[in-house]
Structures are given as structure tokens and as C-alpha cells.
Image (cartoon, rainbow, N blue to C red; front, side, top):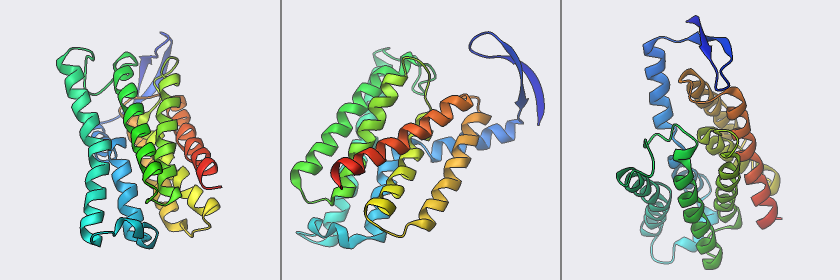
Length: 231
């Protein structure tokens, strides 16, 4: 790793580390694998595998079928619809890149995601089959994306750290609100979140400020959602 002189977004010169192509490729792979679109499905998997007794209301037909349908439902909301929206926006030239490298490119995806996650939260709440902490998770995602949408007017908040901050906040809410022992998953999540943040900085996708603000939004949104629904 070497240092080079670069210009920041304000045109000021400063030195920044220059990473090797191998390191940048690794950081890119990590960014793909830990993309925030996958997080709701990951949280659903962890909940169903670790504490399935809280999801008994989904076993009205059979456990396997009910859980598979829940996976499918979450995958469509968190991955299917957003990807379709992004591809359509790119085809209509509403965004310049599917990688959303600019704040302008993020406006339409943000609005779409806010709509999708409010719908997910509202339907889970109205059905009443999901435990409150699981419904609160989707409320937290809705809140975090809404706040990130507002902050997008000022800075390009890291959605990767918003997402992983949300996982940390969700686990903290289980620990404090539900009195569950999630110390090991929480420790692992902190480790993964640190790797994700490092990868985004290696790729120069975000400044440290944008990384930290993303974590703050994700954590606070999940804790607020838990306080609203689970208290």
C-alpha cells in the first residue's frame, strides 16, 4: 500500500492510501456479497433457524412450506422489486449507472425502497402472524431508508453501513427489548460490519463521515422501531 495525492469532493488536495488491484478486487467482491439488498433475507434466515418458536404462526399449513413462502416473500420485496426497479430506471435513462455512484442516481431507488418496505411492514403488521420484533425490523428498514433519503440531499450516505448498522441495531433490540442472548451473533456482525466499512473505503466509494453516518442511521432506526412496536 502506497500513498498518493488526491482531490476530495471540495477540490482540496490530500494524501490517501493507494491500494493494489488485488486488494481493490477483494473489496469489490466483499461489497457484492454483503450488499444491503441481501440483509432482510439474511435476518429472516437467522430468525427462522435460531428462534423458530417465535414464528409458529407461519406454520398454518406446514413448517417447510410456510417458511419457504416467507423466504420467497422477503426475497421478492428486498431483492426482486428493487432490482427490477433499478433495471427499469436504467433502461429509461433515469439513472446513469446501476451502481448508484452519485446522489442523483439514488433518488428513484430510495423512493422505491421506501415504498416497498413500508408495504412490507404494513402487511406484516396487519396480518399479525409475525412476532412484533420481526415486524419492527421492517419498520426499522423503512425508517433507515427514509432518513438516508433525506440525508442524500447533503451527503452520499453509505447504504452498506446503513444496512449492517441495521443488523447491529436489530440484534441490540433483541438483547435489550426481548432479553435474548445474542452476544455471539452480535460480535460476528460487528466484525462483518467492520470488514464492509473497510471495503467501501478501499474502493473510495465513501468518506469516513459517510460510513459512520450510515452506521448511526441503521442502528438508531432499528432501536426506534423496537421502541415503537415492542415496548
